[in-house]
Image 1 (cartoon, each protein chain N blue to C red):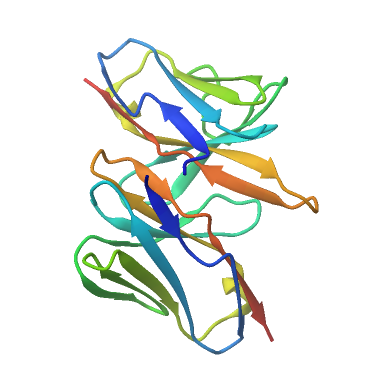
Image 2 (tube, rainbow over the protein chains, first blue to last red; image 1 turned 135 degrees about the vertical axis):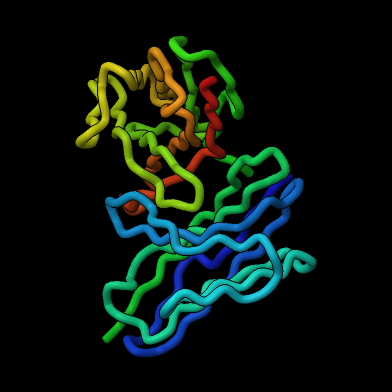
Length: 109
Length: 118
């Protein structure tokens, strides 16, 4: 079956760096998305990786290794507003989204 | 494994026809389901919130007469795109809210339905 794994919850300190990992096993691969979702709001797009390597976008970076079925989202200079759930989703061979359960990130002052 | 399914996964239709998309929660009851629309590499745009047994709540700018939502049971919500036009072509994603122990809510997303209107 298809599966996406990411930690349920992480805690970090304001100003620090946190890495949220995502491993996947899917039937085919057409890209991996990271979304941020604040409680009660729709998920907002953070990044899309389809080739191996690191994509940097401001304080957020996303890394992909297709051979390892692994991605991470790196958040630098954490701010209180970064407290949210972070969703990893893979587009499979049928262009269907396979979703992780999300990682709840708690930022402490 | 998947806890929310959508059917169909792909649909191609002619302009002017209507298309129905189903969203099912597979092993839990969902009193609330959400319908989103996604354009390539963009955020999910919430279209409406569907509550079992009552009328859906539509977001501003979403035509309720064009996007009909029916939440007929605790495990099924349907989105019907009426008189579809090419600009309605998009990826439609549903999600279902599940209440877990301790009264915390978790949202599970479906795999999406790709609609192409010719």
